[in-house]
Length: 567
Image (tube, rainbow, N blue to C red; front, side, top):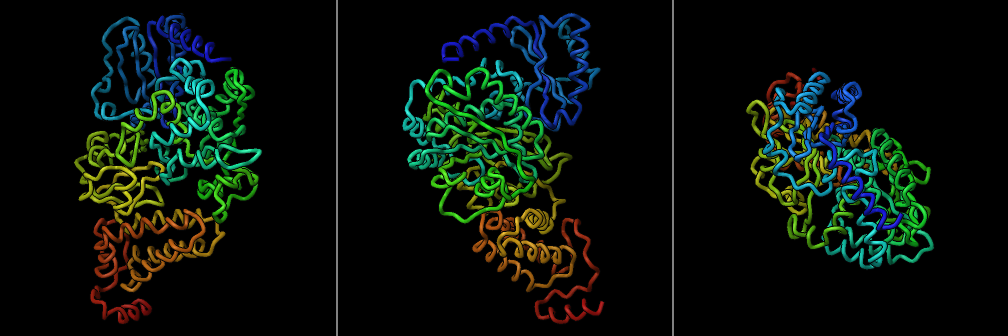
């Protein structure tokens, strides 16, 4: 295939779609499948076959449409472009909606408002095809521009120009580190070696995060195209996608997408009629959170135990099998094709001065509209929670928003107007992370939240370095003593000292950032820690504390210790 035939295929598919009287877009991502999308799809297909309407209608099993808590979602689009979206659809409702739509009659089932802030307040770049195409049909992606950016790059740009364009766009790594993407690409491009590699990190492991899974499920060709452009830019001919083992649907769709792209000459040898060769293979994650760390990920790809190794050398100089390796997050690659299509200045027009573009978040927890969203960098936390998210259910009071997963922190109510970007979140003691955003109400106990994340890090530690292997256990035990009422005030000082020690001496990012939720909650919610220790009281009513007489003053610590030993 060459660029001309690619454009012809896109035009043919668009023409076919325009001739259809009705298109039914059924969300078929993991949340909607779990909510019952499969029987809905079966009911619609049986009805179409029975009515002999397959020539005029089409069922499109799409990726995620966004509001995951409302699935299964069904969107109807007629020939005039008018659309209606229905939530929590049952098989019987789906058939009713279809029959009424065919007859051009009003549908009795209530549709979601077209002006719902959850939809209208978003800016979709990475997710522009999500919910619009069948991810298992490459022609759907081609009709919406898939691989056109790759064709442009291969036939009209040099590798140096591609790297310069990415650098000018201001794109930063979306996996959490926020390292400038263009700078990383240039480092790999300039590394002299006979072989180089490109790796996509899809080993998403943060609790409450599912951004990468959704991107891979909903628009796999966007990721493959971004990797191919990266391969051309840095001089690599082999790529690997490392997918978390708990993402079977994402892995299956990626495999189909790779095969479909190879059959059409979009991957493999002489891509799009050029002299560029690029192959992509899939690797399934080893089931460990630490494999999301880039050096541990590389050792896992090479068939070894997934454990981090000291840096330098960095992957850009010595990565897979000792060769220069470019590693980016899945979302980072999904931004590449739009940048090359629309230009660096267009992308840089979104976001803030230092945090360009958009960011995909998994909005969950105590919020009305939970789901996957994409917003410009710099949007306020208040707008995300109360506009897009619809606020807290049942009139609940906002207490905190947790960002960055086990490596992040909790942002309290007084900082709701903080812009969500790399620098602002760091100033508050949290991080952007990969994009998990958990909303909490007054029923959340912050020492208990810190204990949850520390327990996660403790279980996921690879055990290679002592500070992380032992330090996370000791921190977890101290937090357990606080939440069960057996701690003393000096335990709080010990906890803080241990947090600093683990931060400064751990081998990799998992250990270095494991203390963040503890230090962050100690900073903003110290009164809750003190209430547990001094007053034997959990203000949120979550922790089951030992019934011990109140001895609040520090000078009573020794007396309290004796009492606890005796009882």
